[in-house]
Image (tube, rainbow, N blue to C red; front, side, top):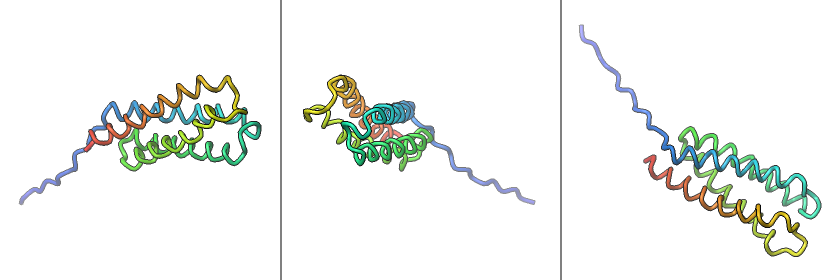
Length: 127
């Protein structure tokens, strides 16, 4: 009688860099939600607010799967964070934007760019 062994696929470890980037992306999405709700409707148009909320929810979903090491989750989180930049920029250039939102938005913009880079670098290290 012979015994056969089944080769099991080796699980790839998710890089710490990718996990940190996924957590930061999720935290930025929560910040988007908390920052959007008080200004929804005035001065932020409702359509823009809904778009920010949808992007934030998609970012959280992508970040969860990125944390688990799924490449598509990394891409979803990175692309939605990139698209969210489009909603940060008007705070710097529109005259009706609340002045108290400028500094937090500048910080969020910088961290968003860093998170996008970390997500993509973490994805590359995963390969």
